Amino acid sequence: MYVPKTERGKETVNRIITSSLELFAEKGFSSTSINDITEKAGVAHGLFYFYFRTKYDILDNIVKIVNLDMRKYLKLSTMGLDKRIEIEKVGMQKFLEWMKINRKYYRILIEAQVHKPESYTWYFETLSKRYSEELRKAMDEGQIIKVNPELLSYIFIGIGHMLGLRYVLWHNDGLTERDMRDLNLIIERMVSP
Image (cartoon, rainbow, N blue to C red):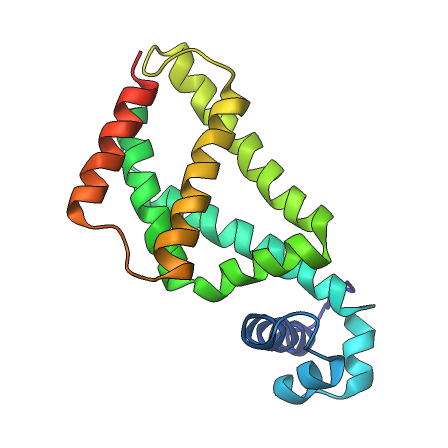
């Protein structure tokens, strides 16, 4: 992607990315054409190619935006908490909340798994790397069990991913209060030292 230097250029790129995100979530990646994107963004067809080589470039950008947005949301939601088990409980709840608010983002991740698997892999490896660092600190402080922090990060990511698919994307019925209590109990028993 060509990084624009002017405000007008940044605005154009933002419109292209926003339009792409909406179309990919609505129609799917394969069913969305460059023409669909430029029409929705209100930009000339040639301008698309000034900033992006292909729609795969846009998918890469969107995956990075989703990753950053979700991590920022969780960081802000758990700020001020200092006990790792509490961070995990609140973090899982807030992840499902983020997913409900941003269903279209998560649909894009599913599209990336099929159409740009290296971006999909990057998304989860980046999450795990940062997550593992925080888990390692908590292990060193004796807050949670001492195990492979990368393994534990993928376990938590996997739990959140599957719960999000089941309770947000597939059925959108959410977790009941009892489900949340059960989930919190599972988290606590799973990682207590």
